[in-house]
Length: 414
Image 1 (cartoon, helix red, strand yellow):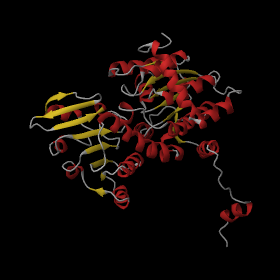
Image 2 (spheres, one colour; image 1 turned 45 degrees about the vertical axis):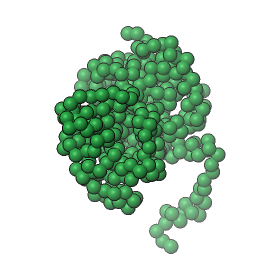
Image 3 (spheres, helix red, strand yellow; image 1 turned 120 degrees about the vertical axis):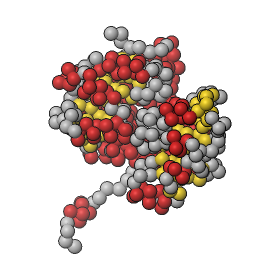
Image 4 (tube, helix red, strand yellow; image 1 turned 180 degrees about the vertical axis):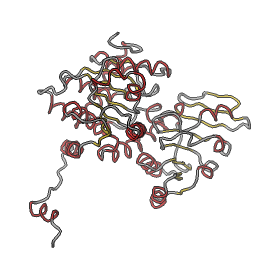
């Protein structure tokens, strides 16, 4: 097997400059590198990763290698993969297999090439590595100590596997750590999806009606940022508590059936399939823009769009314009894939610094502790330590309880 498979190795210098830029603003990851570089805690480890291959991710993978691991990686999304970053990773000794625009067949071929390194630890984003191991490569399971999962959609799959009793090794749910979802899902998604929309369309959000499908942490973050830019925000939900929360946050709440006829921009954050579909497309105004921020490109029904359209046009990069038989034009961003990564550079650097610090610590926890198969939370001590290192890097001091206060909080008597 080749050591890597990338589109163009000559792009490495340009990719390295992007990696170096990001590294300056990743103090938590720098802290962990400096903490562990002498002890080389990953010496002897083989780590397989399926992640969005851009500059911030590259710094995680390079740091893991510098801490002793042999690292093999593939891109978790064909449109989030950046060819110059892949080239730079190969130059840094990471066994990388990916290129932008790869087909589904190529994608799963790369997944299998990465798993062929027989990893001890898996770092997944969407759970395709884990699923492929269980479905097609069970012979490597004895050598896998465990892994971690980055995103909501992947955790959903792992929970289903765990509930069915088929998950054969331990996985850490990084997505549900406080240091992840409070910042990555909310502030990271909030800014980066806006970034992807603006870069791709060159349109304004102020004055537009923006429909947010799903009011989890990602949807909350986007709704907050869209409102901050002057949009009128409408939320659609299936959960009554989240619906009421959206209402009390100042947003209008309605069904997608009703929202379909009033929205100018639609963005999905549910992790579910066909959230926007045929009956909704039929009611939409001319010129609407649709985007998705869930991991998989299934939330907006592309089969329904194709069936209803007379033809498709491409007037701008990353926009598919479906011209309906009645002349209406429905614009889909990034082929319905992650708007923030397919159409931009993903979450801000400082946000991914936290998430990737959690990934590194979780990988180390898996590698140094023998756990039974199952789905585990990030250890509370680890979660807190990552945030403490972030605050320290920013020069921020916080209070701690006095011994008297500690005792008081343990007591039930006044």
